[in-house]
Image (cartoon, rainbow, N blue to C red; front, side, top):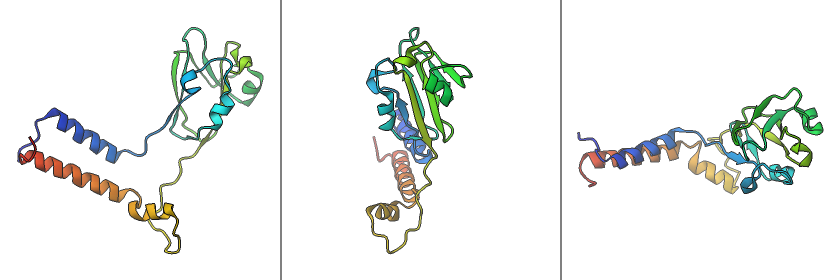
Length: 176
């Protein structure tokens, strides 16, 4: 059987296979969105508009030599002190993995914490995967989605069948 020789097709197949095999992607929460990590921004409001899960990233973007980020405990957060800091970053593009379900506290350690450069985020455990079985009496739209998709196996099977068909089709000369 011939194998596909077009590198674009090979890349497409690889990406599709990786997407089918990987769990839901983590979210990268950029602190302050397009305003970044700067004084005078209400980071409490920003954090309250996001839901954080274990495995997500929190990113801080700022001028490298002007600001920094410290992970501190509640006391350090409340008093704007870095004593006993859990971690510190100063690259200007800091990506921090939120690897535990807990409340995280971050401050700027050069005095700007007093000007509002601090944020606290509550990280939730990952939600359990949807149940494969649904009771007959439940007619909500979420339940209908679960009946169609189950635990994702139907979607995975369709994707594998599609990739396989394309692979066989390319090898047989159906394409190109």
